Length: 176
Image 1 (tube, one colour):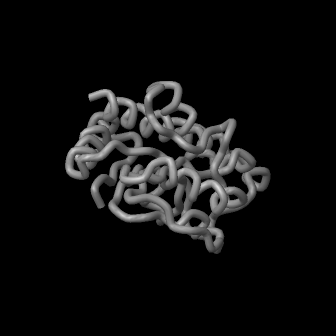
Image 2 (cartoon, rainbow, N blue to C red; image 1 turned 120 degrees about the vertical axis):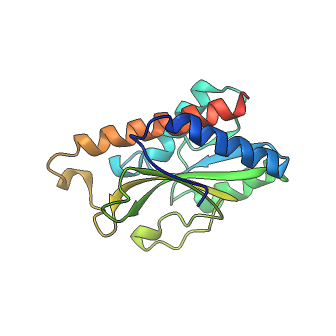
């Protein structure tokens, strides 16, 4: 694990940005970001929100997956070859929501290796990313339609703050 901090930690943006800069330097390559998730479910919007924010903050960032053009389970298989074809020899960083233990909820994590989108829902989707940047938004086994959650405002707020942290750290890392 290259980075593992609660989203409320002080200086989290700066710390995450520094780790990202080290990744770019060690790989001697410019990254592109694939932000995964659907806008149909609040619990799965971290990727598209972060993707839109990255694009707003850093016009030269290569970003796939936004609120207006999400990358999700239904289009991932068709979009991934196009994305990779446009970005050969570049670092692929996947951004997605994830689930974890009760103690993990609220953590932003970055690790080397691909993530498996849809794993928590039992979906068999292609792995994505040389690196996986995730926000733990729910506990294992607690994924449910948002309309069945009586008060999801805290979860939605956490997802938006996580997306802001991730996008700011990425924009900062690309502008160094």
